[in-house]
Amino acid sequence: MGKKMVMLAGLLLLCQPAFALTLNEARQQGLVGETLDGYIAPRAQDSQTLALVKQINEARAQSYRELAERNHLPVDDVAKLAGQKLVERAAPGEYVRGINGQWLRRK
Image (cartoon, rainbow, N blue to C red; front, side):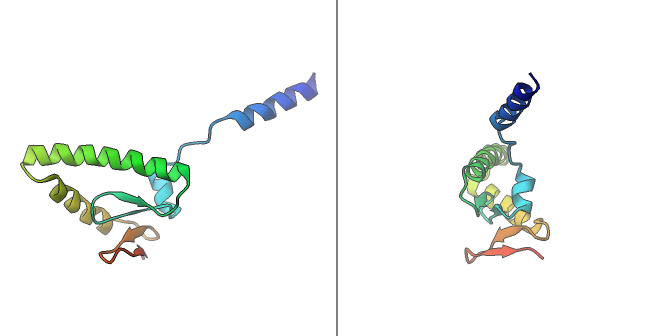
């Protein structure tokens, strides 16, 4: 009976879904970076990072649309303003994409 319980516990551990990656974790690990256009971009191409980028960028796009409508501004202007602020606020060690399209690590 004890051996079966150990095997069952092991199987349950293998079947547990992986914990979702958070934006802060992805930034700290260098998997994503901020861009001047207001959206994050993947630096890694694994499925978890790409799913996070899609989720975050969709939420940001919705927020930018709402702000643009409320303030009678073009959505692109709102996104670019947010992008500038997000790039400026990036923590040391995090990546940002410069105007030349190259990734830079904040110091």
